[in-house]
Amino acid sequence: MLINLVFNSESFIRKYPNLFIQFIQVLFFQLNEIPEDFFTDIITSNNFLVVNLHNFFDNIKSLVDECIDDANEDYLKLNEKCAKFKNYLQEKFDFDFEQEPDEYAPVVCEDIIYQKIINDVLGENCSNNSVYWSLRTNSCLSCKTGFMKYSDMPNFCYRIESRWENFDDSKIYCESLGAFLFRPKTQKEREFFANTFFNSYVFVDSRITSVRQTYKWPDGSYVCGFDNFQPDNLLTLSESVLEIRANGKFNDLSNVGHEILENAKEYHIDGTFKFCPSIFKQFASIHAVFKNYVLPCAYIFLESKDANTYIESLKQIRNNAFNRNLERVLSDFEITFLIRINTVFKDVEIKGCWFHYCQAIKRNLFSLGLKKRFVNDWNFRFWIRRILVLPLIQVEYLERAFKIIVKELPSNDPNFLEFIRYFITQWLSGQMSPNVWYHHRSKKSRTNNDLERFHSRIHKTDLRPHPNIDDVIRYLKAFDCRMRDTYLTLIKIMNKFSNLTIQMKIN
Image 1 (cartoon, rainbow, N blue to C red):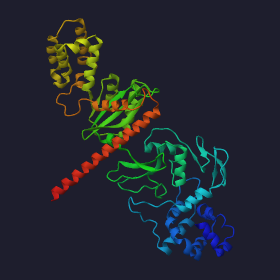
Image 2 (image 1 turned 30 degrees about the vertical axis):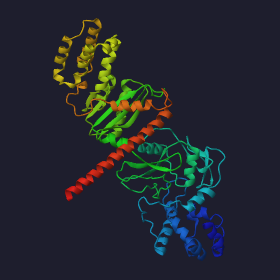
Image 3 (image 1 turned 90 degrees about the vertical axis):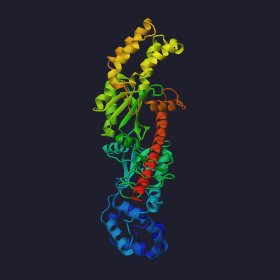
Image 4 (image 1 turned 45 degrees about the vertical axis):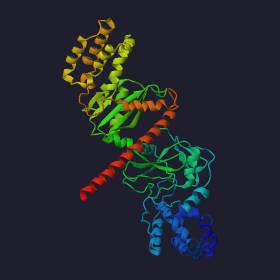
C-alpha cells in the first residue's frame, strides 16, 4: 500500500530522495530522522488521498499504537513525532484512537503495515541461531543465555520450557530472565509458533480484569486470531488469561481450578501409584466440593512419600489458593499424609474416608486368612459388618459398642483374636484417632469415592501403567476441560435461577 504511495508521488520522491526506497522501515522504526513536515506531505498527497486513504485509516491505529508504546526491545523507542502524527490525524480527519470496538464483534486488527514490515523488511537473518538481527543497531547481536533465534523470525530470540506454572508465575519467571511472555501479534508469528512448537500450548502476554473485557497486548493494541467461538468470558471472570494453541489460534483460559480451591469449604485428597509416571513415587489429586459436585482442581506429582515432601506440596496448594473458607479435608488413612494435612491446614477438620476405612478392615482380615470364611459364613460376615458401621455412631459410644461386638465374637480362632488386637491398636487407641474416622450424622461427604471414580476413568484410558509424564499431562488437560465445562454450566444455572428469583420478587 505505502510502497505504491511513494512510487506514485513524484513530488514526494523529489523532496525526500533518500527516504523513498526504505519508506516502510523509516515510517515504523526511524521517525526520529524524519523532517517535521514528513507526515503532512503523506496525508496531503493527492495520490495518497485518492488511492490509499480508506485502507490507511483501517490500519493506522495499530501502527500509531506500536509507534508510541511498544515494549519490544528490538523496536526503536521513538520520539514525540509519533504523538504529533497522532494529534494531526485526530485534528484533520476526526479520527478517534480511543474508540473501543463492539465487544466480541470480529476485531479486524491485522495491521497490513506491520505485516509488511515483519514479512519483508526486518533485516538480515544472522547465520548463527545464537544471534539475531537488531533493528536498533542494524547488526547481529547475541541472544541472552538460554535463548535462541529461529530462521523464520530473525529479529527475536525465544526460550521455551516445560514448566507447569499458572499465568502469574509464568509471567514473573519470564521477567526474572529479563524477557516477557510470548506476544504473537501477527499471523506470521502465530504460524511460526504452530509450525515450530507444534502440539504445544503456552500462555501469551494478555489478560483481562472484568467480564466481557476485550483482550489487549501490553502496548494497548487489540489481540486478534482467536479460535472458533473464542473468547467466551461472558458470565464470570473465570476465563481471564490467554493461551496460544497448537493451531496458532488463541483461546481464553480460566483459572477455574484456582477459583474453586480458593472458595471451597471442603477438599478431597487421594493418590494413586499405578498411573504415576515412573520418575515419581506417587500421583495425588485434590478435588473441591462445589454445589454437591466434587471437581478435580489440582494435581501433584510427588518425588517421595516422606513428611517434608507432603508438607511442601500441601503448602503450595495452600499458598496458591489462599482459602480462608476451608473447613474440612477428607482423605484416606495414610497416617503420614493425614498428620501433614493437619500441620499445613491448621484449624481445619481432618476426616478419613469411610470407604478406605472399610477397605483397611477387610485387607487386614483377608491377610489373616479369613477371606474364605467372610465370603461363605453369613454370621461372620454380619459380625464384621457391625465393625464396618462403627464410624456411623456417636464417638462417645464407640468403645462401648465395640465391647458389645467383641462379646459376640463368632469363634475363639487365634486369627479372630489377632484381628481384635489390630483394631484396638490401629483404630481405637493408636495414631488413628476415632475423631478422624467417625461420621455420625455428618451432612458432608463420608467418602471420597468421587476421587476413586476419577482414578477409574484414568484406568479406562489407553494409558499404560507408569506412563510417560507427557501422556499423563495430556489426559489431565482433557479432564480439566470437562471440569471447567461442568463448573461454568453450574454457574449459568445458578445465574439463571438467581435472575428468576429477582424477577419473581419484583413482580
